[in-house]
Image (cartoon, rainbow, N blue to C red; front, top):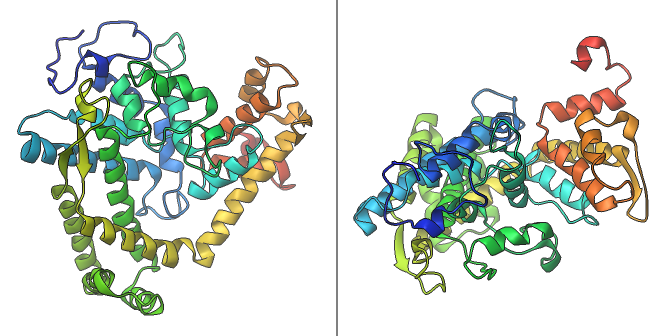
Length: 414
């Protein structure tokens, strides 16, 4: 145990790691969790993955990386508000919250939610694909603990619980999304002292999830404004066409006025972000683990009017941006690229399949050499993992290398 000051809010059960770590550290367990994420290749790749608009389109649009940094700042602020206003002490660990928030999207593939849906469809006979499950896989299996290359970063129990938004296995779900992979059952069991699979989120996971909601509901609107999708005229027409009334109409009325000028809209978004942070509180929980861990002693409480306002903003963004022909076309292209590369690397079905080994990247060949040749599920998972690790730039380059007749000079291969 290090000499770092630690809050009494967390106990040895919370700080226990998945496996013993190799050496003493001047940092707390949760600081190590955060730092291993911050310096990982998976985190850096988020700078080239889509948030709303394709990464690299313009300098001022958010990527998954800038989104994750904003979620981390909002998450830390929520923890500070709860510590100050409710718990009256420095109880919730802000380093833990920051690490969880930085991690929440590292399992997301190229091309945003469209890419996630495409990979899940491709993996329908091999255990599915889900961004949160992939995040857990990266943390427990792919981010190395040491220079020797030990698999997994040996995260703490509180950290694993904080990133685990969904605690239902693929085989138990509708398999359309929001699940963990079946072979991740042991991680869910690790979260409780007797291996019980509780579905509820921990307090830290709830904070991360609300920080994520705040960031993408408000900041996606701002990016949409910059791109011309969100305007006073468009929002007004949307409200009229959807017959918005009652409290939702009041939300739209508050939104319309600042939309007239960019600076006013930016200030409005900043002010609402602060309001959403300041107005959270805690209520006592009756969860079975409340006497074992303070992480289950409380439930995050958000005012209903704020939740309804967020939902209105999300729907505006979906209808005016994500369902626009421009973004739908980009999403279609991203899904097409993923599907074509996957079906080229792995041809056929579970009963009769062929791996096109001669064109597979070297790292994929190396992974495949460690499994039986006739194992479709593991083969598909290795291909899927490789594609999910790519970015909005690297995957189109691979596509062009495979299918574009005019692409393939020596400089193109580098």
